[in-house]
Image (cartoon, rainbow over all chains, first blue to last red; front, side, top):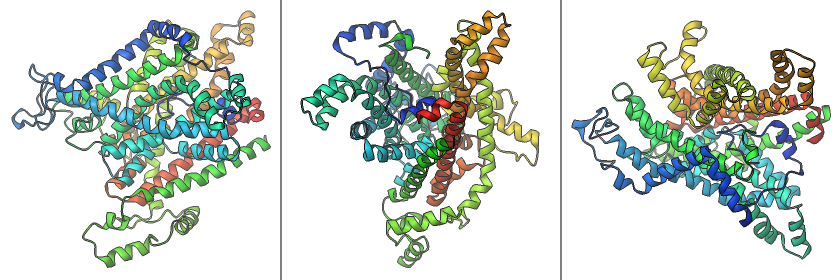
Length: 313
Length: 315
């Protein structure tokens, strides 16, 4: 049921797109109930790719938290005599155009990238999930209008809409995160709505309705908890997508502003000095690639763990 | 079939309206007065008043939207606040580059994705099959601009085979044009290749499990004929439609790729427009791309409904 945001992964096949507009009977969701948890983690533990992804994510988190300890230099301190050096024992990834240590900047950049990965997902969760629950439970006119707005938002190329929003709001890390948050909203809304349409016909929800639970109580106490596993998977994949979009914005000079060591803007400067010191571009680029790869692999693993037979399909 | 097309059009009309409302409303995100943002703090009150009147900034939202939508319907996207050129003219001048880039990137994606997807489905444990599966995972995690920079370093700076950036018009020099478009198309198309590979593999796996493939094998057909004539023909329908649904992603990637390779396309128009606060240019390109994506999705849905009657009945 989950998919990466379309700007990172193929959308559902067209057949699904057409079918998704009408309520359908799908396989019952596999909630992360307590009894299943042990099996879930056993499957996840056997999934080597997911474990590798988890390790990459863990490494980035550790680097971000311990950045001042790990980084040998202050990421902002300039040293003009050492500018544009190749890798050396002192500077393992060389220095940039101001003589700043590239390795230290990549390490501190992990902080920015994790924040720009997570905050837009939180924005999308806070707005997208309630809207999805509303569309799925209210149905009728509310559902129709909401889903048309979502379809309209999905018609915009994601990166372009993010660029346009930042262009209007003004460049900067905060506005970039708002823009990426906005482009993530429709994916959560559509996902939660689809799942809600399935869940609300299941016996336990009907039973709750029969004893007089209000729509709000049905949505929050009965339907939302059963969406949690989907939300976790989607969040992991969306963090990856958000990091890519934000680093695209930084690459265009619209995200984090200098001297902040954002990977996207480091890559932009590295491109200018590609011939003088290639590690200036390759290091932040590889950091983006490995972080995104880690979140993608972890998300795929979380998605497949409840039922490993789904892998590759 | 006609009823199905009408239903899809009834779906598309309000979405198109909402797309234009969203695009128009983007201008309202500008903090403060757009006139001051464009003219600068030193502008005299007279200049600001003139500017506001010239671009209808002094009218209420609804009135502005109706005037704007009426103009857009006639192909008038307004004039650049910087150069006073028509936005439609600026777009038309840059459009061919973006069209060429996205078409070439799509071709690169199909050329990489379909053969590797078939091998990954038929021989998953062969060297090519494993490489394709791993490559797709890597391809999906690789940002356009990083792949582009690696390609520039390798093919332009180290091997000196291709130009690192710049554009040669097709009308001027066909070979030079292709040389200047090779690296950008690969940078933009590689991720498409990963998406198409995954879709080809999964739909080949679906088809190969069908009874008619078993029958074809049972009657002793040569395996390549089974795979190409019987399996691939059916497996490609979802692949082609998924490729069609990627127009938005290609446009978004084109913005980044054109900036990296200094190609004079719509992406560069947007990026320059952002830098110069030329909001109407940004708005024009955003609207055009969203409408093209909407129309492509509509065309893909109709095509899919035509090819597969079950979809017509379900929707």
